Length: 438
Image (cartoon, rainbow, N blue to C red; front, side, top):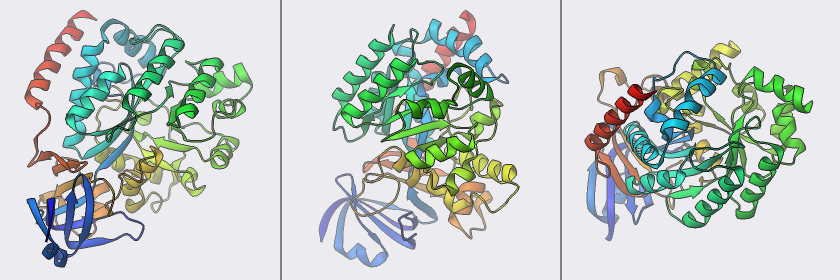
């Protein structure tokens, strides 16, 4: 018998591998952070585990992948609601950040965000904010997987004074975290309307130099489209394409207002998209044409956006809302079916971040990023089909256990790597300071 670190047994295992394998009373074998075997009860005879988890009446599946958020602004959750995007940004978020955003705030906010994500089944997230070095340290300590990118702007940010300093900060992040098993760095100019041509070109050159991801907000509002046409005579997508910036490991966030030519450019350049349905709805930005993009073969992942505009980081809510919104928008109940949406929140999200060899599905050789969901809940009974329940019935509170890279981050809904009570206490004190001084 082979000695291994952990065995999960007696659960329904939803692998999300290419074959769609499901083990109704399955076994998952984990050692040194990786899945080394999975299958039915017969394989138990081959292993001697240091630890066992009984997953009876639980669903065992890949952890969720949040392809776009801003963990540093979770402390502003609920501060400025029911506003258009530009009013929300210019009258509240940018001024709030100018006055309060510092390393300490980002550290506390990132901890709060990671608590929320772990407790709702997210094991990987892609972040775009400020002081990302702090976010990296918080994520590493918590044990969660992350792709992190410092927001690049043409005006002073809380981290740096110029775009050149932002690029230098990003390059240092890339060097610092190269080869880390949990943290990878990407390059992220905020948007074409906040970064000039020179900044955009230099940002893409930096991403290409180190072969890391490149992503940005794109075509989020009608006004952004109109202003781009006025300034460049091109849509935001056409403008980026004219600069040669849509080649390689690129994905765009939001993509609500796309022309026919924009969609063809995405298809030709193989640009991926992060679908942020609830943020787009709440800010009144519109409905992104995700069903059409999907039918063109464009890779789509799901993101929550930041809690300042969503207002949660709950991927179960995002799956539910995103699926139903496409059905309403197309007037077709068959689009964005449950299995497709679950794949978007797992393996497709991993592909978008360039992490499909590490996570997104439960397969031999992949890192053990696993969640266990308690199915013995009134709202999950009867149980006929796993993906249907994941998208349309679950709300995240059913997540019982979270494992990343083979390490247990939560069991029995008790966090093991982060002091939840201490973080909540810090956030409450910080929110009082913000409320009383803005």
